Length: 572
Image (tube, rainbow, N blue to C red; front, side, top):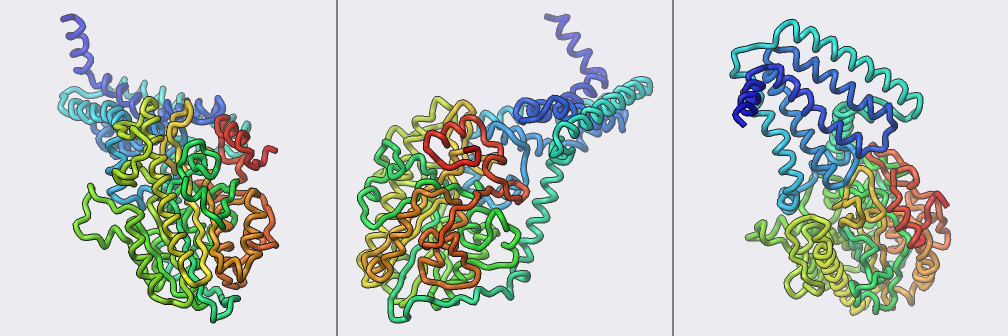
């Protein structure tokens, strides 16, 4: 034992030991990505060799490798983020959407998640904290890397780089979509950071680029008819766990008994990230024309132009995204969490706390009224979305995000769906009691992974989505008074309820539902119109390019679910 201890001590008395340790640790994210990414053999070789050669050369800039390692230490953040991402989602690099999602995530959401990521965070600490310590130890040593070693190491690095570039060239011949900036870590991270910065810059100029936009909207309905429409935007609700969609548990017992309700069975979101998916619901922008979002406004402005009083109520925090911009178009805007006295990390309002505000608005007597409710729905941490009385499925006291705890996670998640069931039914009850033409539309922004298969995927907003993040519930309810005036609307909705659609139909459908006519409205995308037509469905990828769903990286497990549920898919 003593000899081994002396040998180890002797190793750490040599700067060459630190050099090689640093060279290996820096390339660790690349090694992980070789196992997680769908890359060809030569692309994987390039993924390792090209960065490794650059690391080896960089570590030779100073004669004590601890100096360049400390200079490089900010990259530990990206390495840590990459490893946590792989822990959560199983694959993919830190994408543009990830940077933008982080920028739009409030501190409460972060704290709710961090304490459940202990295994990945522990791994990151074990990997990178010792590197800081070793760097300091290298600095404190009096010896230096000898010129002969630096020369030999530089030659080796050059050979490694040349081999990596050859592998990259072969990879390019095998796959025309392959490129270093997209498939070599960390080059792709910096590329995605640039794209995220470009998006944020364009977003910051939104008020200037959209100030002259108008829908030229008018109302097709008589002024004498009182109309109230409520659009409810759900959060992280996946259709799979809704009783209405065939789930064996009683998660929507109230909605399942509600008359005049139409639910659409084959609806896929165009984005699995809230900061993009919600604006697609509210505006003419879609996966096919997403960049139009920088110059256009939302359906709230269209309703205002048509003579409606508009209200936006949110149970989420403002986050400097298009959701906030569109909310600000309303006559009345309120982010509930930002107006609560005594709010703490331990007290988050439930969606039901929006109802008293809805009651005041409905009692106000407005002749034409649009209310948009942005709920918190099924967002993690699930147990924080309902009170003790809402704990129908148990036990739900999960303490970690592990496969063995999945039954507890599902119980908690299903309880949140029951909470949404009650919330929507309460809204319908209020609307049905009114002497007015009323209707409600509900859709979730995206779904959620809950350790559903051996991939052990969790949460949403992953660079490559899964079935569980894509299939969302879309419901419409019509009052008897609405049916009496415009019976064809619900009839059309019912006739289209099993057709394949994507979330971009909601904007056009909401305009048609309220009789708001504008040149921007496309009745071919309106599920309550006889002119509705099924079109090729697209998903908005990480670089804001439209991709058909067979081109976004869905895996075998996803296809099994899609086929078992009979959802329309391009491979058919």
